[in-house]
Image 1 (spheres, rainbow, N blue to C red):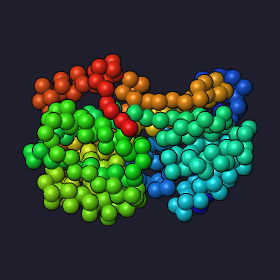
Image 2 (image 1 turned 60 degrees about the vertical axis):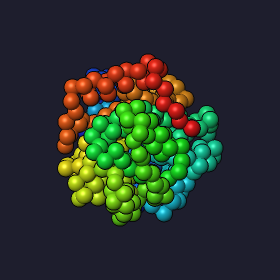
Image 3 (image 1 turned 180 degrees about the horizontal axis):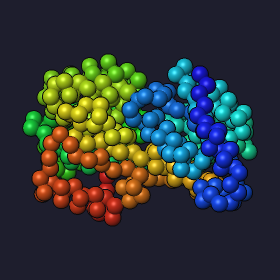
Image 4 (image 1 turned 120 degrees about the vertical axis):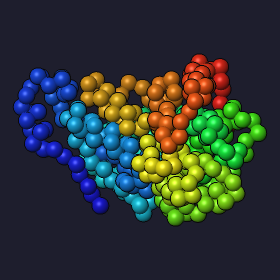
Length: 324
């Protein structure tokens, strides 16, 4: 379904204000962006919603227009072709699952600029953004190890792919940084859109002793977090601050700041007329990932200091997180 977000009156007024607006490029060009969301679409409380917030902020602060597509049927190429036909300044593909389709469409349209989020492409007309999810997940693992009473944690992945493996490996290494003997229960859901499946996996892990559940599984993970709340155990969110999904369970979330990345690159496009680099890798040092506020429980001053020290050592390179 085509869904277009425009504020025409504001744009018409802005177009008549010549160079007095600091939010416009020097020639007052009206910039437009198209985005294809990942397969779970809007309302996932996580990945897609974060990217959408970034574009909403760019609309409100920079005066851009944007259009978006969802492709729950998996027909990513058709949705991307529709966006290309609208002649946007930039077309964004969100998530590793759209990469093959994005590269196929980009090869057909060499004059169109694309942005790939959560994947890396060598095509000249695709800018790539990846995140160091393992760095933020390391800190979540530390928090989980500090708060567990059973010495058992649960991790749920949406798929067995590198981006999810980085969540898993960072979480496990962070937990073992605090307690080398801690046990991590792991399961791959092979689904990012099934909250009932997430609940079922989390319930199984909780029954096996896990008292902190960390799902990196989109909307499937929402079900896992809700199951943790029902069972009165802790959980950690991903991508966005997911505290409001389960306010009695979510201790913190691994913020993958897709909204900031989308806004910042849009701002560069508007102000400079182009995006300066062909790829970006964003971690703790670049403020691309981080922790949401600690809620539900409290950390001692010593625990807070240990997390701060670990963060500083990751940024400096003294602590190295092994990822495959």
